[in-house]
Length: 106
Image 1 (cartoon, rainbow, N blue to C red):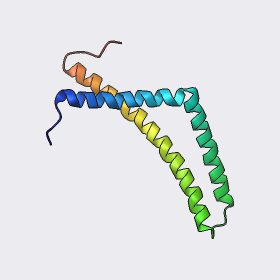
Image 2: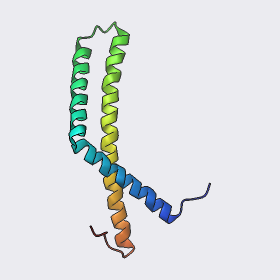
Image 3: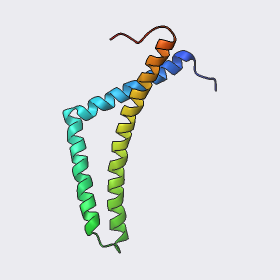
Image 4: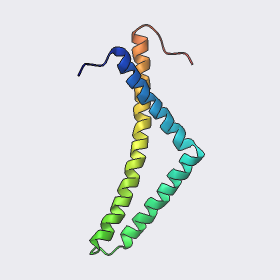
């Protein structure tokens, strides 16, 4: 397998930036806010049920723990996409400045 060309690398970096922007737009959209709020409510419900669960009911405890873990993971994936996109954007701007092109104009 051959190494990606500089242009292919740049396109891959731009794709990471784009995903970060899309993720940020999503969580600030009405649908995104609704989903985040529902996830938080579900997480709270699962944690409350976990506190009340019989520790000998292993299956129930595991199910509730998994519910919280899935919600946390999805929220972290979205946060990671935003963070990685922003970091990649800064990296691309720095590369442009080093190459003498300056930051891209809006």
